[in-house]
Length: 367
Image 1 (cartoon, rainbow, N blue to C red):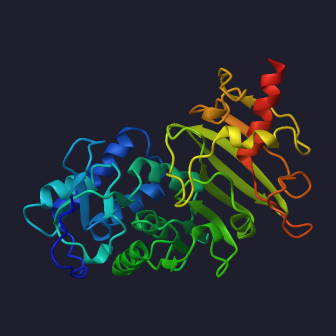
Image 2 (cartoon, rainbow, N blue to C red; image 1 turned 60 degrees about the horizontal axis):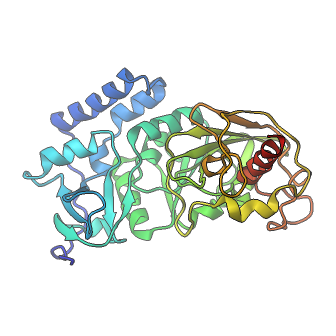
Image 3 (cartoon, rainbow, N blue to C red; image 1 turned 180 degrees about the vertical axis):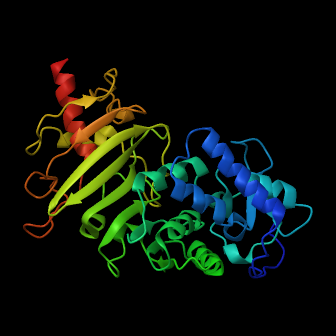
């Protein structure tokens, strides 16, 4: 069952700032500070200044139980007096904001009910955005490549810290990209939004001091590493076999050397479109292949799973707060994955999951 919305209309010009929305935004910032999640003064200033109502003028809310079929959602329009109070609570509540249904043209939405289909666009939980921005250690003078523009919220916050012209954001969904581009321009953010496949990065403008992926990947693509500047930092979520547990990969470039750290987190970004969460059994043939140096990891021991791995279903037992330190020269000198085959002497992908699988098998063999 599907009830189509009324005939579309383009986004209206952003409304002028109002006291109630400013108060709601500052209250959201205050909650993040009180919880201890928000510590960086620059990130706090950006969250306080960037008008979320411009980037998130409409939002879907679920009107039946999660898991019920078909799903029923209502699109709230912040410009409509009947929707404004609930819409403001959703936009400034700190949770993920649902913004696109079934790949629709976002700038042509109309308020109303829809049933069936699925949500295809949403913003990150605000606390995750805060964690990401603080982890990137942004400061004026740096240049950021964001992969996965989505609603444009993260790009706008980063641009507030870095300044106009310092942020390039790539989005594969042309409707999300068009909406984010128009709304970021309305804010005067100076963000460049490129409609392309984020897995390829954005060679035009490389190298970048910071690279951020807002979607999870099973490994770090070689293109991202090639576009990372010397002294730069790359941050992404690495998908594991459990949707409840993810690894946060931090990669640093030191000349031709790449250093990577994988840390356990209780939450992360969703897998990139067209990919699914990797299954440990499919990687078993890689165990024992190639020169892999044994490493220690401060992670709890997990039981052997059905494939003989000790905790591979949760990234080899990696738990929030645990850390697997992979500080090795992750270049062609130590990576021998047969599926990559770049040009001789070039750097290969940082296959963090495969490295962990090696360690998992070693630990399992050690008992």
